[in-house]
Picture 1 (cartoon, helix red, strand yellow):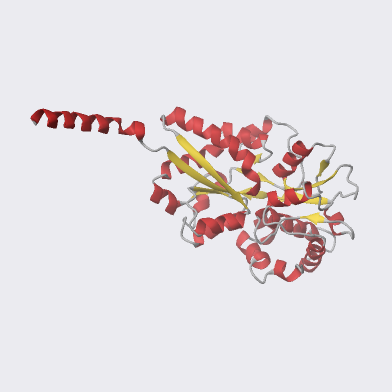
Picture 2 (cartoon, helix red, strand yellow):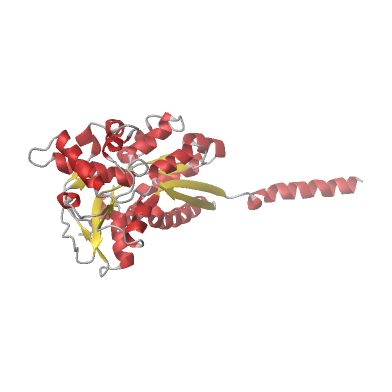
Length: 333
């Protein structure tokens, strides 16, 4: 009996010592917007290798993609995302209003928690048959424009606001002329997809529209996939600065015990390796050294920020995209 007890004790200690080998690996979920799939596929692999080399720990990163506002709504409703990587401040602010993250979230990482930026460009059919060169061409009769829904998509919000900014900067431009310009523009929009990738599918696969308005990285990807014998990019005279904020979701990571990994994941977005990956995927990097390695990668054009023109994202969101706001008033379909 004593011998059996000793054997049992030895086995128990052995199993306890072997526990780390059988421990479940850490899994992170990144809830992101529609057109970051390719970037995060490469970034996740780089971070997993970095984390393994640094800590010896095995890590898995899963992705969730969709229209930015829809994604944030899912997190608020219970999607257990450790990190959220969005294309605009309003969506991340919704997490703060729901008490999932602190109100000062933007101060926790460099550059206001924005590791890379983008802008809105045009994609047209080969040869540009409608002769589209600038924002003014989008309101011509007979021009069909594909833009995702500004109520559900940051891509759509940036396109809407970029058009508004263009109209404001024209001779005699005012809030009234901008409103009329954007109303005409959305009068030329035949369908509103919920996200940027859906809008790309509408334009590229369904053959709808003469011009697609989308983020710079998505425009570049579309040209790469379809070839310049099918589509080409048009750079307008000016556009908008699309700041892409990232945040770890405090309530989720504390519940799951993944705060250390989630923070490290987002901090690694600022690393030289990750910044080069961003440039490869046509995101404008925070690190200018990464940008210098790819001269001519991005067209030079005036880019206006939302706070610069509208005072703040909160003001722009309330005036234009809240229920009953300007977009609801001007969009008739």
